Image 1: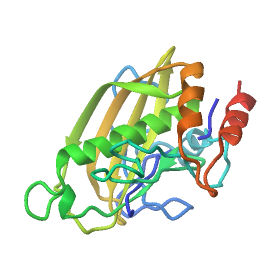
Image 2 (image 1 turned 90 degrees about the vertical axis):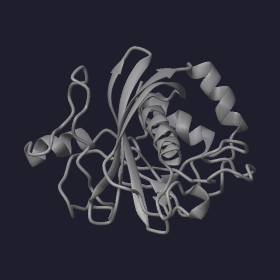
Image 3 (image 1 turned 30 degrees about the horizontal axis):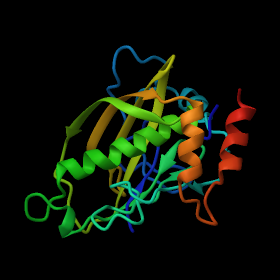
Length: 226
């Protein structure tokens, strides 16, 4: 059950060091420190074969595709005049989108507001779980560590991936990094499924750009894995 403005958030599939980059050109952060209850998560320093095995969780192969978005959502709503109007993407690793924040998302002078960064990672981590399970979810718990001030007007990448599932609950990790792989923000989250029926209703109301994955493509990919 997986497919797996300038704001881009990308789901990671493996750990890496500063300056590391994936085959698709995106920087690789560390994504270390998941909850002890989450198993099967590769750690930095593990054999490359182990990390590569974990990264093969996506049903889209190496194809990177835009995901649907909404009208009103603060993060991705195209009709929300005060929103971020982000676009997320799916690939073999999870979900993605480029970040270039402006003064409108600022806290201290020159620094992005922490609440905005948490909102971005929240929606991204939700999509990472959806791409693995075929179900939308609600946030149950999010823990965020702000490691460095996030500068505005600086291209960054936010990344996330699902690490484990326990029935209707799944666990996700996310982070925001720069082109050198420096991690600015790291988050872990717990999400609860809203079920396939409710997911189908919401998916029909979302906006599917011509170059985005259609509801039919999403359902076909999810059902192939069942």
